[in-house]
Figure 1 (tube, helix red, strand yellow):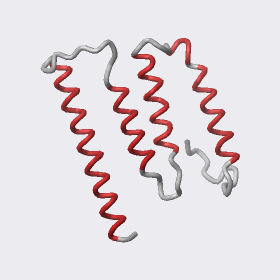
Figure 2 (spheres, one colour):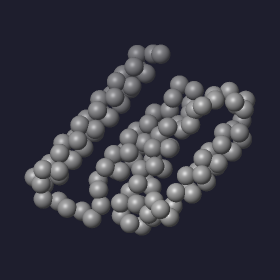
Figure 3 (cartoon, rainbow, N blue to C red):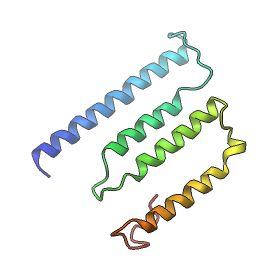
Figure 4 (tube, rainbow, N blue to C red):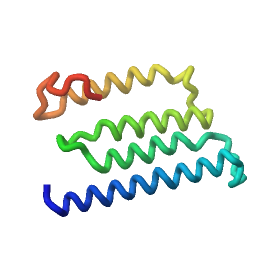
Length: 121
């Protein structure tokens, strides 16, 4: 790892930390009524989406971005539930569809032996 890589990862860590702390402060103010903002849905699914985007933007050393992608998908699903667009009781089979599509995607990726990263989503 070069010094430039270390600086980039440090800057990314600081940016993610500031984002998480800032969102925490906003959520605290929202919970205490300090902001006076009362949306029809909860704000917390946005946290998963933002954290997923940050994880997706910085891939793992092996080049995979799976964790970030899953956080984005779960955050969007939770947000749609909070907005009453796609309720859990109606949409839970989509989890099976997503897991099946992910399994097929992993099997079709070039350069990966099946089962080489067992237990990793």
